[in-house]
Image (cartoon, rainbow, N blue to C red; front, side, top):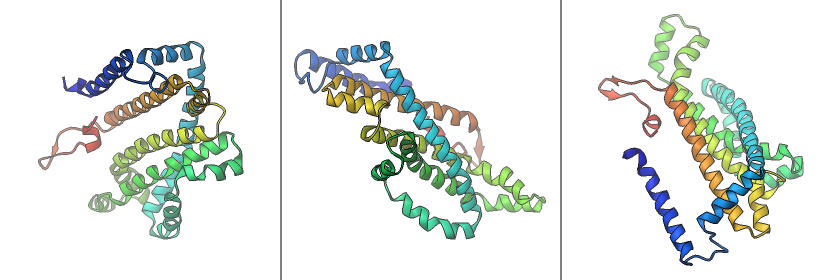
Length: 261
């Protein structure tokens, strides 16, 4: 039964929503009935409209995320391993980190127009720092004693990093990836709501101009369901790679974020 407790509240809300719509407790223009939303969603799928916008949004999310990862991960490793690089880069990175990516949209549009470059730039800005900060934290918080053992065994610096430091940092790296995916998804929706000609955000804002509240409901629900599905899939991958079991000195060694799956 524990596996089904999470669906109790959503089902209860849908039930209240359906009963309220059936007996006219809600304004149908503002809150369409569940059947109307379901019918609209099915029509959008049948016509290929929803899948078209969804595929565009997913491509933007994963392309922007990939760019952010290949920028943030090696930079975090370099900053974590070198105090000199840390001293040069961290003040500037901290300045950029406190600027919301959404605030950069007008400037990015002026620089790159309303094409894909501006949207990918927003995703990169939103995704970069969760990956960077968590990877950096994992690198600098690695067990120094284990690294000294590697030195005693004659490991090179590269071997110490690959065999000792990086494996210890991987749970933090995975946490950063998970957070980055969530941030990239939310940032994309903001970018598409402001300047886009396709994507789920564009579909929602176009529906608002046409007073199609049912399409807005479909778009919002698809965003929520898909975001949850991405998180669930990612957690399953993380659980597979970090599936160690057992006790260490009487303590459970399983990472907390894996226990929450």
